[in-house]
Amino acid sequence: MAELQTGLVVAAHGRHCMVESTDGERRICHPRGKKNPVVVGDQVQWQITGDEGSIERVNERRNLFYRQDEMRTKSFAANLDQVLVLVAADPEFSESQLTRALIAAQAERIEVLIVLNKSDLKPAFDRAWARLDPYRRMGCKVMPLRLKAEGQDAGGDDGLDALQQRLAGQRTLVLGPSGVGKSTLVNRLVPTAKALTGEISRALNSGKHTTTSTSWYWVDEARTTALIDSPGFQEFGLNHIEPMQLAHLMPDLNATLGSCRFYNCTHLHEPGCAVVAHVQTGDAEVTGGDPLAISENRYRLYRELFAELSDKRKY
Image 1 (cartoon, rainbow, N blue to C red):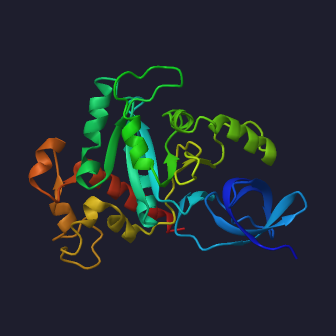
Image 2 (tube, rainbow, N blue to C red):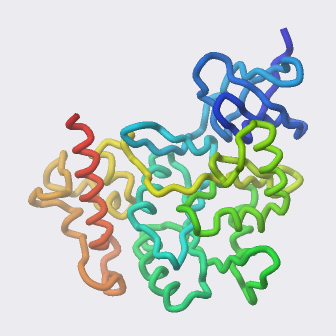
Image 3 (cartoon, rainbow, N blue to C red):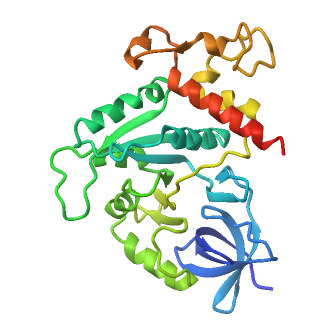
C-alpha cells in the first residue's frame, strides 16, 4: 500500500478534486466511497494511485462555511481565517443577503471583513456607506475599495494596498453576489488566477469556468496568504440555524442578551425584552448616544429571519 501524504484541497468538481501536496505539486484525486465529503480548504491524507491519487481521510476541520436551503447544503470552503464579503455601491446591495452571510460566519466563529466597492460612484457610495454604519458600530471591519479592471487606472488611493495588508497571512474566502467584482479582485491580487482556473477546469473536466465552483489561489510564493474565489449567489439559506440561535449570532442583538425578563424570550413580543428596548428608530446618526443601539432595519431583518426559520420547522 502506498504511503499516505498530507495535502490541501484547492478545487473540487463532482467526484474529482485537485489536491496540492506539501511541495506545491497538484494532482487529481478521488475520495474513497460513494459520497464526496471533501471541500476546498480541507487538509486530507491521500496516496498515489497511478497518475492520480486517492483521498483516504479528511482531517478534522477548524470550521466549515456553508449555506443550506430546503433542497441542499452548499459548502463553500473549510479551515478559513476570514470571510471577505464584497458588496458594491451600485447596484444596491441586499442587506438581507449580507446579514445571512455574517450569521453563517458567526456560527462557525469565522472573522468577517465587509468591503464596499465602487467608492468613486457618488452619491451612491455615500448612501451605501451610511447603510453599513450599524455594522461598523457592532464591531465589523468595513473597508472602501475602488476596483478597476486590469489596465484601467483607478487613480489615487483605491484602497487595494490597505486591503492587501488585511489579507496578509490569512486564508480568506471572497464572497458576494454576482457582478460586484469578485473575479476582478482575485485577478488583481493573483495575476495568474485566470491561467490557474483554466488549468483546473481542464483537469477536472468542469467545462467553461465562470466561478461555478470554489477555487483556492496563493497570493504569495511562500504560500502564506490565500484567496478562495467562490460562486456568486442570489440566495443564502440558513436552514441549519435554529431560530433561538439567531440573536446570539447577531452581535448588536447579542450585546443586550441576558437582561430580558423571560429566559426564553424570542425578542419579538414579550414584555421586558432588552432587545426591543434598544431598537432605535430614525436616522442612524441619531442612535450614537446608546452604545447598545440596534437599528430598526437590523431588528426587522431579525424578525423576518426568525419567522422564516420557524416556518421551516413546522414541516
